Image 1 (spheres, rainbow, N blue to C red):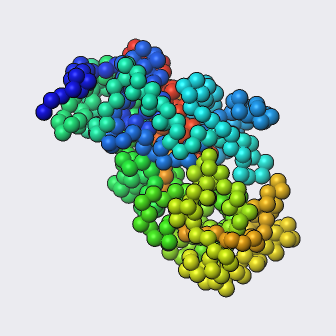
Image 2: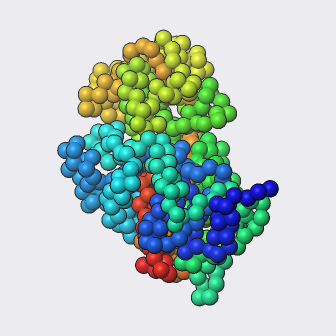
Image 3: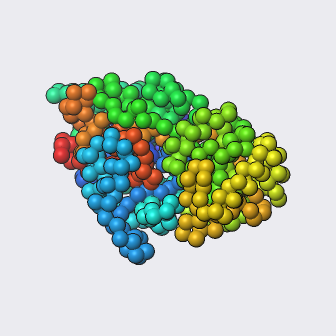
Length: 475
């Protein structure tokens, strides 16, 4: 079979090696590869699957930044210190301060770098009382697609898919200097002259790691990238890397289930509850404050009959659909069959196999709480910011869908320092090895601040690419 000249060139380069090898072509990998190339490195970006993107092209497309032009245009007074405080609080006192500082100190530069590279952003309005608008929306997978076009066009970067890294090897001085990769049906050993960056994602689909570290979520709906099996974490562990935040792995509330079935090809997270929808169990009863963090709501859902919940809302909430963010795009979810519509609560209950009388009683009781201005059952804020969806569930048509906890990301992984260099179990640096994105542990701690998963991928990918791309990969 004839081989194109581009393939011959790629094979010759693989044999010669690269300054930097990046493992995993999600958002973190793309940012790291482009940034390392800017630092003067030749880069090989490897992807295990046959398509780039991983979880980053499945996620809603929101990144947390402060001090941006979008915030200034909206008249929002925000600051690094305020963000640092909120990230620390979200981490429950467990998140590592040096990683929070690394995020805060580098986030604005990362935003401006992405804008300069053509990534479009708009500002999402907060969904909780008193919240600041910090989530900058790009649309599902937009940032990664924009950057991938630039990876393909950059002659300093070689992109190869269907390339699974099997092992990392250390040379003189303990530096990681080669990777063993399965490519085109053959095994290759590829030299990394400066460093290796692991951006392989988490382990939402890694049964072995879930059994070891997060067995509670083995039956959660898997929603991460198709190849998020924890490869980078295992590769780093083999070299003695430490781990962080593994006890805090948690699924997210809101994974949509078509017709109550788990057999949905592409479940998505939906959050009309943050616009005023109520959440009930299979008995038609509310069981939590719907404004709670979706990580906490997922644990509440596990305690319900069958581990199942249903989100119920009406037309005013439906009309607040926002196509800039998947979790708020109710109209698209309805069009795809993930949300049911009915002319009455009783009809909706029948569609969802919920007791109609119990659901009607729950909605009536909730509406009385709205009229009183106080949720006596769970303390939910009522009618904040004159939001029409934050009040009565009373205007037909009515909408609903079944949901289980969904495991989109694991937010735990290898230990790194503020330069994204991987540290071993003794706290010593592993020379030549860096990590970014969901492969990294220690940043989220015991909680999760919405918008920091993609935010961390970009910010930490930029730090890793900048430092790993320097001669020797040393800070």
